[in-house]
Length: 276
Image 1 (tube, rainbow, N blue to C red):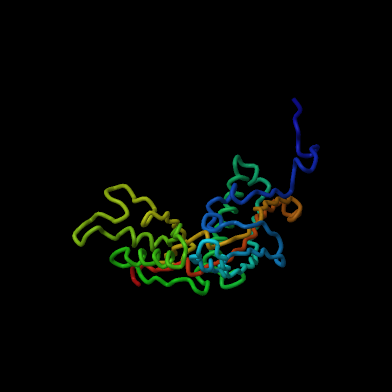
Image 2 (image 1 turned 120 degrees about the vertical axis):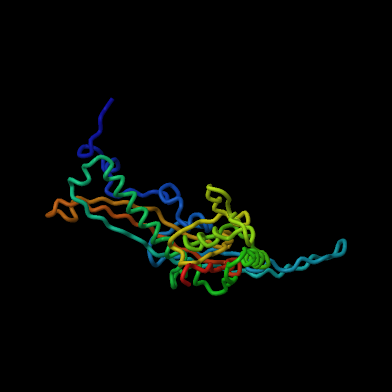
């Protein structure tokens, strides 16, 4: 059996840059779980054009043997622009010699990439515009004493031809919803009972709780109405960048973009938070 060492191995076996499929290393990123990934992309200038049917048209009743009229469908496209999120860590050579240190460092950098990607996906001002800022998203009001506003939000999405698939909540919003009781004098939560926390689901929809949602924010999503393009998660390491300091640099980058085909199939709500 031969033993390979990095100084004598071919470059492909001791890479300075390693690319990972996003679903393998950041599977919980919102863009992967709350959108349909339509393509891969690298660079600020390229874009992904995704065609979609904006209006299904009209289905009529025709007599036997008669000509079937054109349904008159409307066609449109979403043009996906992307942003690159990146982070850089600098660590002494000695630090990275500790057992599992390199993995702990890389995992931490990847978590920071996910946090930034989630914040953009939800709240980016433009190019691409975050889900909470897209024009045409339904404003479904405030969840206070019951889940009726959530029921109305789901109904609005269905009226627009969609199907609600996911709910995104801030920690404070989920806390307030979890405090809702089954009755005026009851201590039983509508999302759980006893000492066990309730499953993170509302009205049979899975709930993702993330601090990247604005305080008290809730968003009901039809993920099939959101298309995305992502690049690989690229992890690079260099021992030369800060040569005079005997410091190792580790860089992580991730490119992402998205577009909303049907804004009316998203609905945002709020939950009052303590002190609001």
